[in-house]
Amino acid sequence: MTMLIDLNALADFVETTLDYSPEYEDDAFAFDFEGARIYCERKRHCFDLYVGKDCLQLPR
Image 1: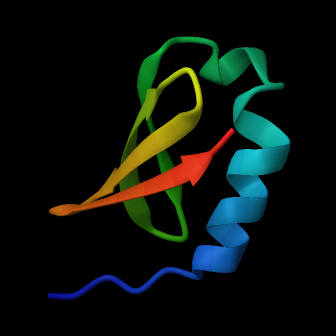
Image 2: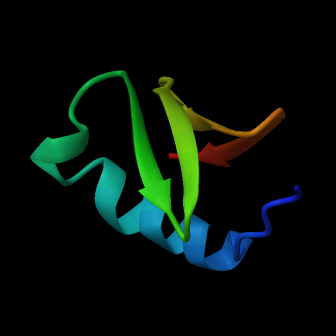
């Protein structure tokens, strides 16, 4: 089963939420987005987001 998520909406969520919410203050955590479970590793210059077997990098 392939899970499709809106990458623009995910990028907006990451940009406006992950560095500002105390819920996501750890350097590694998981969250649910549009029905998908996403594992996130916070790096100095980017976020590594693991969605299934895919890894997406979003700049900080």
